[in-house]
Structure formats: C-alpha cells, structure tokens
Image (tube, rainbow, N blue to C red; front, side, top):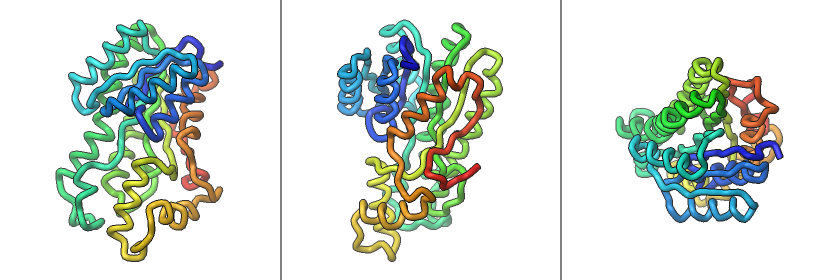
Length: 270
C-alpha cells in the first residue's frame, strides 16, 4: 500500500468526486477525515472507509467559514495526531446560477461571481491556510487541489465557473513555489466529464436554458451531447480522480509540484 500510516483530509468528501478520492486513499492505506457540509453524506462515506479497515472521521463544516475550517482541522489533529495529506475538493455552481434564466454574460449578477469564487477558491485557501502550518512544523506534506478542465478551456455558458477554477490552478502554482523548499508538494487535478450529482443538476439546467436540448432527460443530454466530444469517447469517473490523487500524494510523485494534471480522456492536451 502506497499510503500506509498516512492521514488525509478530503474537504468536500461526502459525494461524487470527493467520495471517489476518499475511497481510493483508504484503499491505499490512508486513514481519512471526511469533511463535508452535509452530515449524512460525511458519515456515510466515513463508514465506507472504516469498512475498508481504515480509521475515519466525519467532520461537518462550511468551508467558506474560516472559524469552522480551523475547528475542523483541529478536530482532525485531536483525533489522528497529525495530517499528511490535504485534498481540496469543494466546488460546484453557486446558488444564483441555478436560478437564472439566461446563460449570457450580460445577465450574470455580481453575487454570482462572489458565490463562485467563495465556493471554489476561498474554500481551498482557507483549508490550506489552516493545514499548512502543521506541514511546515513537520517539514512535509501533500496538497492536491481539484480544479477542472473548465479552468483551461473557454466556455461562455460556464464563464463564472471556469474563471474560478482557473484561479485554483494559479493558486496551486503559487503555493507550490512558496512551499517547495519545505518538502511540501502542491498539485492540481483537473477532472473532465463525470456523471456526479453536480453534473446531473447542471445538465438539468442546460436542458432548461438551451432550446436544442428541450425534452431530453439529464442523462440523455450527458450521453448524447457531453460525452461524444471526448477523444477517448468515454466519460471519466470519481475513481479516476481518486487514483490520480493517490499518485500525486505518494512517494512516486515526490519530485512533482506545481502541476495541473488533466484527467479528461484527452479533451485538453496541455
């Protein structure tokens, strides 16, 4: 096992990509703290980790709130005594995006930009700020931020989301450069097209706003419109992201830092 004896925190680990990452880390021997805003999903995934024979802790916290983040990290330290790995996976679409009736830039509201940068970038910053001091003390640590290929390729309907995801990539590079001499690796995974609860909701929104998609069911739209442009002609899975994270936090990647790895079937090749 590549991660035997390691302690990991996965922020946003209660479902979708986060759950896939949690389980892959546990399968490789890590004990995992599952942080999520939803108590039920956090407890469920923590239970799955324990069923794999690893220690786990469910921690409920709103990662936009610095006080809750600091307390969550302290809870993990009190339980496990250390932290070796941080995975920042909180993200998604802001509340305002789900409510609007247009995909056009001129119809986007200021609050929509605020929501996305809080949800996608601020959560990564606050969690990293809470954990990095402990990494500095032990002179080691691994951070993986979850961005998106949406942060690398233009998509007007997802402009706000893409801009926020691009900021995660920049944050990753800057933090990696600052911490490199302290034996702390900071990398980024950029998922492609994955059927998760978020994608299901997002697909339903597209169907509502795009005339050509009228009458389609979410999974039908996903399969017929979103998957075909993928060069490998198949969707990705949460476990694909989990295995990428395992690699980046293992000793196999000890000399890799400041990188953003696309796991997308070839959609973005850079």
